[in-house]
Image 1 (cartoon, each protein chain N blue to C red):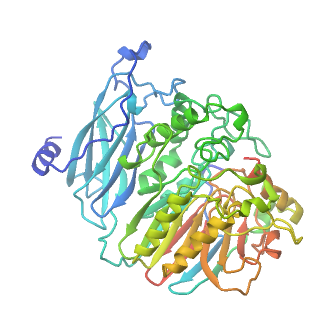
Image 2 (image 1 turned 60 degrees about the horizontal axis):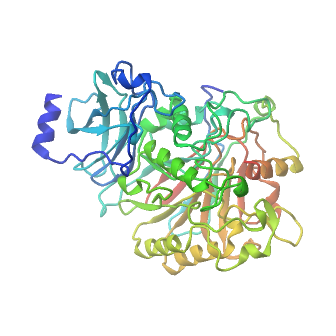
Length: 493
Length: 58
């Protein structure tokens, strides 16, 4: 640590961990309060990095020697603890280029977020943490390229929907083996249900710990349970992630201030605040995403040189309620022009990002199906009320904004629906010969829905009345992409 | 299953400045392997029911 210490003092470029809004810490009466903080390995949840910039990225860990503790504290006492960190150019840490120490404590869930700066653009780095005598696993991260440069290629994978009970996270493990330079997680990273309330044919392979998550302790415990999975840890350690939540990080199909079952959840905003706080604590997010009560700034753009802009959306926090009681419906009120999925402020922000973009590829990293999927062959319009089909005027405005901005190559990436899909963005969703305005790639689930199946011709039955639908399979997995100045390739894995 | 290997089911390419995707790889799951699935290939009606259940049940 002496070398690291000298670098710290010499460079003065170390930034500390982010702090959540001050929260009174009550006197801890638990037996663990008096226990030495690092007697057992506290790095049971692995490490992660995220939100890369040309000069750095966020590195994350959370101390939890007893990760499944029912109080959500991960077995940590209420005292604060110093955690050291290092960033090196090599996996053996012989060339440490940044290092420091940050303080964490119970008000942060003993999470550590360090916004590392002062690194070189477009480079691979390795990082690790130390708490007492315990050294964390190391992670690999990558800085974004110089903003003026045109990278020859980017390897990016995206994934969503990993219900812990529905299967092993082997797909995360395979994704990690590819060592992409960037991972987009499009939501449903965790599920809120108590054990065995969401089951698959043949039965769940493992159980959630604890009741349905509604409290901070519950969300902390649930996220910790997920993060004990070695394949998920490997995926986090392999590359920087850009994360966005969907519904299950809080409550199924919540919409802004409205719970799925609003009548039975009068305190939903307290639940949302607890979920957001635990989400921030467990994700490699920048301090701009530190929640303020029930609000969390999630939407943001990340540039990858002149090659790509990734516009990461929040399609839950500002949306109008699902029309006609949610579900699939032929629902004319859903088309009301004032209705919005991302909210009017985010819509305007996105239009500004399109107008300002100079990148070859403008990529929307978002949660719910963008293209139209009429579920019947009849003349009506029976579509799902939760995704963009339930907010068609809002969808039209987003498409119009990229058309008006002259976006060179718009690509929409989607999760949520537990199947691989491909879809063209058509000028007229009912006319397959109408001009194409963009492309949508939808990733299947990592596990949600359990064991899947394939169809040899790769078409969903709905393709008969939805000419935009180009591909479908109900296998589990993720999508691996290769982005170059001349092409965007999506491999459904 | 733990350790299950990945394969590329299909690949699509979007070319710079060209609207729309083109398929460049297609590798349907071999029937023998598909038949081992707990949920073997289904009828169109069953596929639609599965789709709606997956998207609205949870």
